[in-house]
Length: 53
Image (tube, rainbow, N blue to C red):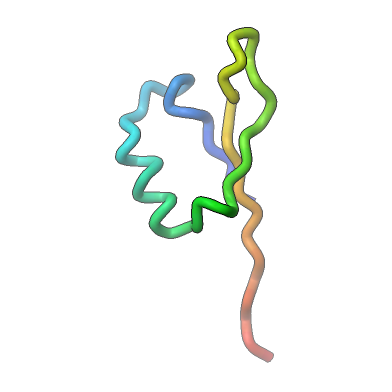
C-alpha cells in the first residue's frame, strides 16, 4: 500500500503526484477521509504483486 499526504497538506507541487500516477495507475488511487473543509487528508493506492510463479 502507498499512502501520500495530499499536496494541500504538504505543499508539494502537483508534478510529484503526477509522476507517481505514471507509475501507479490513477484508478488504483483512492481518497482518504476529508478534513473539515472536505479536502482529503491523504490518498492511497493498494498494489498487488503480479510475480509469476
